[in-house]
Length: 113
Image (cartoon, rainbow, N blue to C red; front, top):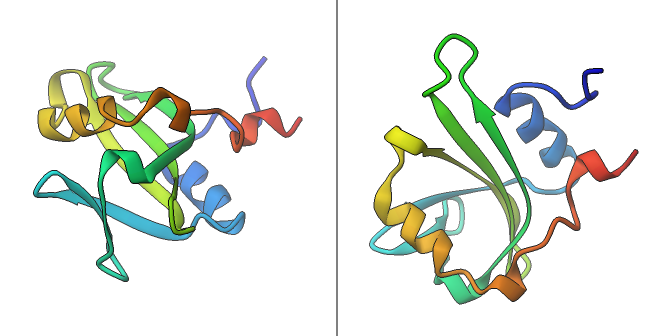
């Protein structure tokens, strides 16, 4: 049976935005940056509260992961990253440096059933 959230990345992003995860983040110079405020974050400043992995419909090697993020100062948003053959290795290393205690599944919308 298909999950009600078995959708594309953009569908998830819209749902999380409606739940207050409206900030968009990008990666530059080994920091995650809020695209609106330009606030910079190190791995220890980030809390991953959910993640969703996707395979491309037409090409399974097109893989991505959607991170649902909170920051130490309360910013809440999303970051979409390619993984597998298309991964940004520096960004992947950044996420590996996030302390395990800062990673949970507490905001995963699939848990709202």
